[in-house]
Length: 534
Ligand SMILES: [Zn+2]
Image (cartoon, rainbow, N blue to C red; front, side, top):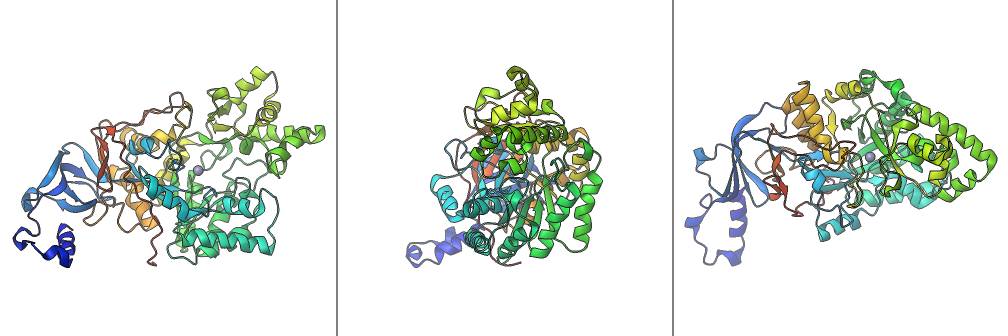
């Protein structure tokens, strides 16, 4: 690669003057050599000892550097360390736009160098503008965007329930086309959330077909009903809907944070895997991502207020709370919804506004001297609140799904504000926790299988042409981690503890973490969907 770079330079006529061919290729040192590490190339192959060379942001050498006399201006001794491609967070809510999250520090300390955003239906169609801001402001990790069905629907139809008119459907399709044309990787949906939940399957298929006009496009879905939706379609029907959308649109698909929810779905990991395996066997291009936690994070309104009562938005909902007959009906629904989620003591506040944080809904209800369902209405009057739903997922399900060779890894993590003490620990620990549990403690998976789920597998799915593997010519997103200390430290009590064990992390060849400490460099790139067809 250095050779190629020099040849490019030599081909410029102005540089030929005074150029001495004697100093040509291979003579000078490259930027960086990482030597004597255990190299995991991202393919799932067993690791091998070796060196990698990095120059001008790219991996230019993999092998035995001494054998070819390769020298680096800087040399890092990686004896005892694992050297891997940078990790790809397949479902993230990293904040790269406001000032406080751009450096992506919670993610970097896990080894993450790329994040996928705009998911759960939330990505704006203003893709070019956002990518442009990233390029202007700088971002700490590479960012990829989806255009979101929910966002597009809200823009055209507000939060109205019901089907779009033909003109509204056409307006939504135009917005999807705009986002895809500007570099989005695909269309995301959040069919569980308002307003995505108001869409029927046909509406989504029509929009997905628009996205499918673009090469390499993807459908990313947060299912309509992950298993804990009151009067919902149920987990199985929801997964089958996702597969149908992929199959009929011609997109390639990914189920976000794939795991059935609720105690009634414990022990159903094999069923969940079978849906995907059967679809793949008949040629549907469908994949998934997961995080290892048993708790989920979302918001109180989505978990406890039925869709019909949210129709029209916050003010319309509060007006219903003020109508005694409607309020009573909502109370009944809320009680049933809470039961489905394990009860009010499993709903734990983690809101940016700290007044309720660190307590469960059951505790807050006791303080308010109300039953939990009534407390929900009192709390939501001042706006929606971030909550976790504890013990929503079954460890055994997660473990079974982790063994599937189409299962990527994600944080689903939302960067907390600087003054926000409580959040879901997954933002800080999802990748090392998955590694700790399934590789180090349970020895369920090999390190190379796990690293593939963090790297090459996701790069294959997103069709990133030059990331996800330790290969010559690839971008230098590289993790140097100490397997003896690579651990998640974030807990529900102390969710903001950074992961440990990433000794060095390169993002596009620059040190984002050096000697275990973030450098603050903003070396991430705004990535766009590869446009080269299949
Ligand atoms: Zn999400």
